[in-house]
Amino acid sequence: MGGDPEEFVIGNEFAEVRVALVRTRNGSRLRVRDAKSGREIMLCPLELESLTWQTPELFSRLLATPYGPEED
Image 1 (cartoon, rainbow, N blue to C red):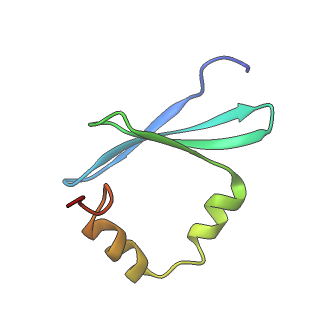
Image 2 (cartoon, rainbow, N blue to C red):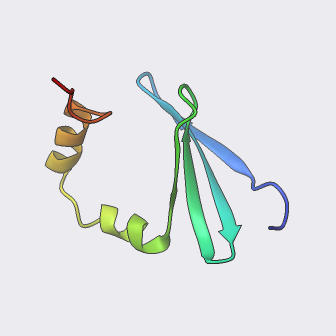
């Protein structure tokens, strides 16, 4: 809707993501795409707000198994 969104890149020595504001029929979303793998997620304002409710420890735990637990 409305053409291609303008992207910007955030990166450091560990990761690089492309971020864009995307307008959908259900409102605005923030698209975050991993530049290396191409994985992406579209987050609504409430999902983004919920990130502010978390502690740094939660993100440390998420990074311990970034793609989920290994299957036996």
